[in-house]
Image (tube, rainbow, N blue to C red; front, side, top):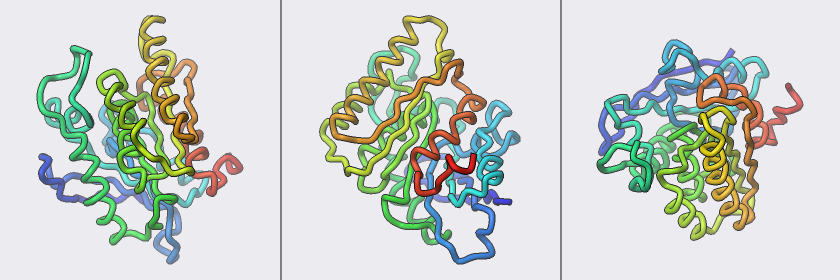
Length: 263
């Protein structure tokens, strides 16, 4: 069975630090000198345990990786739980358009920089992680999905793969598309993105959300990025839905692990 460690890493100049980080180490990690590919994720408290999940339901990633003995390290950063700070820390550009997003300075670019220049080197020293972008992924849902889209673009020299689930696309659509247009992507970049058909109540709202996802997908594909835009039929904006697609996006992002053959 794999093991989930909880460590703390300094996160200045952001607040609520040092920040908790949840680290899944695969079965056999302590009995071998093997190095492993890695997936960095947002909202680490929601990934592995129902006890720490915000709404009492996790993604069940530990159970899935344990069941199929998948040799992958997963590292999840705990969000800032104070007020609206999760939204502010997971927003890479000033919000445009919607009235639901709180006013104030956003810190998404600082968060992304912390992942690359603090969390990643810290974990590479502490754990046996394969170094190099071909072994390194980034993933998240909702605001974490937006951040994953930003990270795979702004730091394409660091990440070769991203999973962007139910991404919050309305607040940063224009600057994100512009950044994608300006980015010289490496040829082996892979991006999974999805949206659940039951995330919004009206057909019009769903059509708008789907249009935003396809707009972003088209921007990536114009750079010959390998993408998988997916509609989860019957899917909700919830951990229970995101759990169902863990096998899909892991198999797509890490084909060398042959996950599909294990299922």
